[in-house]
Length: 591
Image (tube, rainbow, N blue to C red; front, top):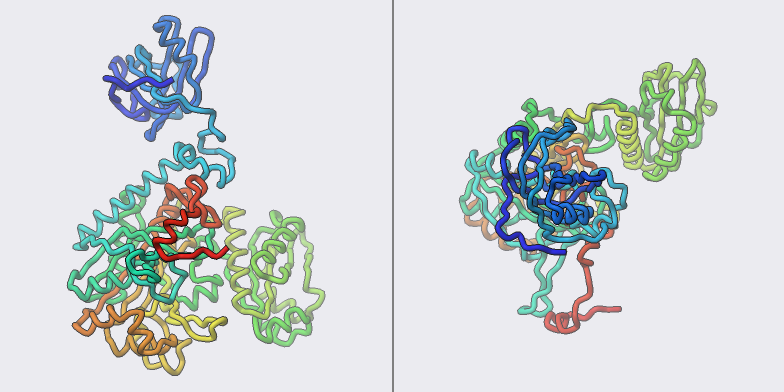
């Protein structure tokens, strides 16, 4: 059944109805959350993006309207006109709970099939089903509120940066493919057969061009694309709050960025965050927390046991120490919560993260149970316990591996697992810090060469520039990442504006002069005409919304996200295309 809206027009959103509206004639529009029929009474809960309101019908209602109200079902779309009146049974849990609309005119604007899952916040359906019917999933208030928050955050960014002299400039979406970074999404050209555009992984080169063009301060809410493996906080297409500034150093960019975070938290969450934020060197973060995006709201810091076990005869530890390492975390006071069964689960978790196993010692009830101490000398046992400050009620967890990176990765994941599972932090309090003094290069084991840790336009620390050719692994970058609650929510750097230094950077990552000119010639040519010192920063808008709304899955803050395999199940993208389209693009699909 479908009826035209006609002359009815919404007076207020459902969630805006208040006690002060009693006695007024109003029209509400929305989706049916639920219907209750109680003998000669009918109550319909109507929902829109603002919240819910109750519609009421009784034996004094027009019989035709009463019958129509009886016929509605979940997710029908209604327009209802009537008088607002006080409710007999007040619902203090909702803002509109003191009043209801006694309906005198009702229109069913659209009927609805029974949804494949219930439209409510605590729905238990899996992601694939919800994303297949994303238009239904998006009706859930919890998702709508996150997307409304996203809108508000984007607006706050534009307002803040505008107030600070930034100019919004759109950069192209069809660009030249350049190396370094994740795989590009490519777009074939019909006009130039055999040639391709690339979708931007970031507006990096263009925003640097804008600095050379004299725009001085740039901002863009930019769409970016990376063809890489997905995870809970990563999507193939994502959005950045992208900025760039001229005549600045690291502290200048950091100060402006901190100002935005302070502004956004206050404006959107009414929460005061203290600036300046803490700064932690990359090496310190790796040593203490095993990763470069530490959640420092709780302890469980990594402890290096190599000194205490330097002469151990225990093969599992001794062999690991030859090329890798042995480190521990002390799950302080968790012995009663970490039963043997729970520890076994942690062992499996550690293995899933790449460890060969997980050694432990549990101090509970005056007794000690351990998977490894019987293989150590008394001196080694004492040294290990002393280093980790083991006490009654603690559980010491140890990872040993021939690869130092594996040790750090596993223990970092383990401490995050324990912190979340046992509520070792206050989720309402943001933990914000900068990671600075980051490496300029990473060594690629597959290609047996150094690659840019950020991108090849990041400037080295002035004191380290002399080591570009002699010791690239020791060179630190003028780069900075902002970490909130264990998530890297953004990063940036000071850029190279000296053509000679840029050439040295390209040589350090294995580019010949010809290759550099072929890939980045337009930027290098622009810099020959003068480029001011400049640097920038980019927030991952999706991740920032995640963190500020306390969400763990990035798909909940994107209107139409992709699954883990990068497929969008609602529309079916990606999908085959007609042979005619391929012919126009001079493409052949190998089967």
